[in-house]
Image 1 (spheres, rainbow, N blue to C red):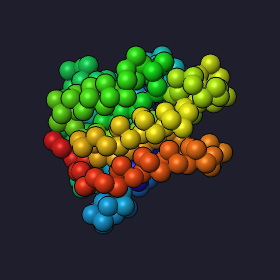
Image 2: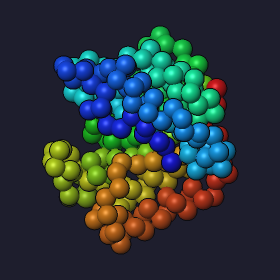
Image 3: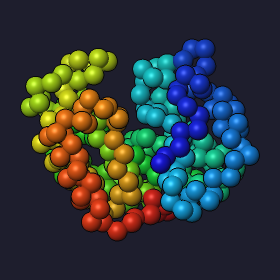
Length: 229
């Protein structure tokens, strides 16, 4: 599992909704006395999930969280838990766009939002895979893949997305199988974590079969370390 110790973004926003590094650190400090290293060693804990979508303007009061702040969050985490890898849900492409050098951040996280929006817009699953692997290698970061199966469809399912985005589409079972097996099978990636657990969606027989096909591909792979730097 990836541990989100600071919780949701509302816990570390200023009054104007912008990101507060000080509030984030204060949330992390509440776990300072917890030794996560045994759980990292046994493989239960994959990484410390620093935050979600730092580049989302609407989430952070119209100001993106800086890449320097991401590296400082990772450094702060490592100062407390040296053995606990760090990850942010931001693509390698977003992370490399600035001039920040990552010494403490270990892992990028590329979630496919489908062909119409997000990081995968305009790309086939294969192109999305190859682009993110190449950029993660360039940065010396590990890579987690995932997909947004509730809002990342191409429209072929005929089912609208979540209530927050009714203009988008739920993925069809065929899309889940294609995108999921393409990304889960990438040898460079170390995990496949998707948004989000939704029992009604996942309990459908055709979706369950598609997810099982993704799991089968993952099962054929050897373990890949998330720490690549």
